[in-house]
Image: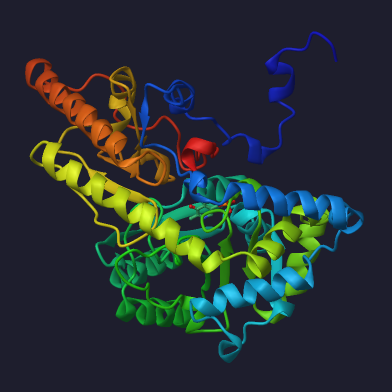
Length: 438
Ligand code: PMP
């Protein structure tokens, strides 16, 4: 097919591809990676905090001394050695043998992202409803959109998902004759909102889902990145049935290795493995060996502490800069861990319309619309604090505040903000996640 145009392909696409649109802001992010731009947009961990020489030596040995297995195919579920180490990692958060966690029920995945995709493959038919926090992780929206599912958002406040709102949403979905399959939730140090579901609400949310016959998909990449307090125990530590626990080494070790996992109810484990084999045959044997060796021979608990300390300092820098520079009427969350702050702009400001002007002023963020399936969220932005050093964070917020003040002044003169006030994409058009949206 030489000389074909885009149109020649368009009418051949599967239905699920129709909603796969790259957002307009992606092009801007290409510019945002320039060194002069302070990017508060990404979700990248601060890899320079790792002992890179020691990690390099370890990787070298894995190839030189164990290459005949580490560079070979592996099994679909992932190696037993890694699944055992994963159980030790989960036990730190309270998911232990006492609550039925066993290496047998762990499926190793290519990051948390493949874990999400497997869950969608197993449970979502076109038209099914997924309940999810509003806002929620952009990469999960992309997965649910590919599955042609509909996302119904449930609002949060400073204490996380609001149980009463969850009950209302469940009732509303049932009334409309649709089928909600599961609640997708990031209860701890949420991406993008930075809030954490309280102890008391965890029990209520689980009870509500149980009563409604809803599965719970608990996504927990950040639970071990608490700065001020230990996070409340995960949902999976409280219920063994009906809860899928997803996590990843992307934020606690290194995202470049692409290793995550699902702890699944026993009855479902085989189906997940079959689905994963159809997708990827097996997770990378080399990456699994790297994580296993890291967890067996290197001071990973100490490394967790280092990450927490670096991020606490950066979180503090971001909160202080926001307090010092943000115009009146701006509010923001104060995360006890994780990588993100969620800011709410003064009435009338549109974070999406403002992106080009922010980038021209050499600061980048992700507008709130990226985190909703329905294009709402224009009055919000996500700010990342894990990657830029404290002084860059401060400078970025200073630039951002200037842009917001100019924007407000323009509104006063022209009566309206220039640019789109609503995302062009509809329910089925979640942003395809790119590195800046992670
Ligand atoms: N879930 C959430 C909530 C995330 O924030 C991310 C990454 N930012 C992922 C899943 C996927 O992470 P990865 O594939 O790198 O493990």
